[in-house]
Structure formats: structure tokens, C-alpha cells
Length: 200
Image (cartoon, rainbow, N blue to C red; front, side, top):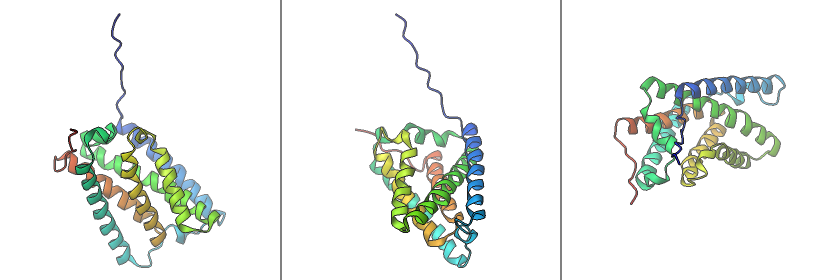
């Protein structure tokens, strides 16, 4: 009896970039409709009242989340890290940049720009909206269900992105922080500054 080889299709960053771009445009269209029908107003998406404060939020949150990722990397054995997370650093620099940027744009437009806003309007409670949004954020990362520690890896950032959005009402803030966090961790791995902890 011949051994059957299981062919595992590797993730293609170019395909993911196309998907993220397409869904980002859909999210923008939905957000535009929410503004047109006065469910939300433009100030809930792009408020620039305190630019220095926005800048500080971006710098501090990005640094803190990269540090959180570094600490988790040293604590969590490689067997508990999802395989897709180990492959990102193999992409070229421009692929990493585009993949991380468009992934952050899509996820923040969907979860903070649409879902969190609608939940807040419906529930009239910020932290309930934040917690439910984070649960939904975790739910779409189905690849992490087999390695639950990865859910912790994304739950703290998701809570942070949600909190940042409600504290700034500027969707660009969680987008930039999300992007810088993912980019920073990936580049640390790519250039061997950071390595996963080997399993015993």
C-alpha cells in the first residue's frame, strides 16, 4: 500500500493581501452607510482634537504590545505557537509590510469601526461592547483553537485596540498600533533578534 502524501497548501501573502483589500473596501462602504443613515457620525471615526495625545497613544501602546509579544515568545514553547505565525517572517519585506498593514486595516475597520460601534449603540455600555467585540475577534481566529495560548496572544491586543478606539474616536489609532505591533514582532523574528522558546 502506497503512502499517501498529504499536501498542505501554504498561505500565499499575495492572496491574503487581495482578500484583505477587498474586505477593507466592503467595510469602508458599510461605515459610509452608517454615517449616511446617521447611525454614527464622522467624528466617531476621525477625531483629531488632541493630536499630541493621539501620537502618545500610538507610541506607548505599540511599544507595550511589542514588549508583550516578546515576553510571550520567551514564555510560550514553540509547540504552542500556531504554524502560520512562524511563517510570516519568511515573506519579503514589501510582502510583510503590505500583509501586516492591510490585515490591520481590515480587522480594525470591521471590529472597531463597525462591530464595536454598533454594539455600543445597541447596548449603551462601552465595556460590554469591548468584551463582545474581543470575543468575536477571537472567534474568527479559528486556527488558534487547537493552541489556546494563542487566544491569549490576541485577546490582550484586541482589548487594547478597542480601548484605544473608544478613548480617541479615531479609527487610525488602533489601525496604526495594530500594524506596528504585528510589523515589529515579525521583523524581530525575521532578523533573528527574537526566537521561539524550544519545547522541552
